Image (tube, rainbow, N blue to C red; front, side, top):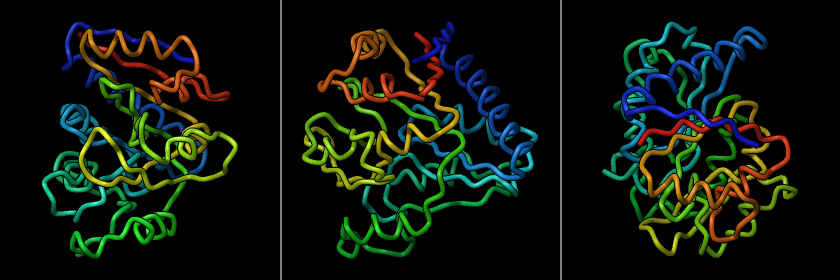
Length: 231
């Protein structure tokens, strides 16, 4: 199930997404006194990160983590951790608590996937709010359609929160939230941009399609996904 929100440009979509996410976080803070936000990496979320970082929230009681991460050192140019630290953990959001997936100070040769998953699971907190992106191949988080671990990642009954994935069509080993973990998140947002991604989304939204991992999120029972789209 999903709710569609369409905007004329990326800047307007980013601001509206920040407003909606801030409201969802505030709801969790009001209900439980704390909240956990999981975000996705890449370059697309930067405007959203900037907008969200300026929101008036009780950030000291908000934990921020990742929907997925590349298994690279946290100082690597492709690290989502580094991206979030630069663009989200600043301004008012600087007070938030960071929930790591990859341990700081490790070299690439020291980051064995099994050890990374173990480390991430020790720190894992179930998100209240989750921001997903989607690639042109329909992947979301780091659930890629041709990865050997695809079945484990989409199995909604497995009870596994995080999984190591090996993308066939993208660089770096990854660690990713599974569809089961996504299904247990109260507020799920998907941000996409451009006609090509909209065409992929439209196909994926028609039902479970092994070609498009995002379709397993959209069709998963209990997931109410708000899609923020800009041309």
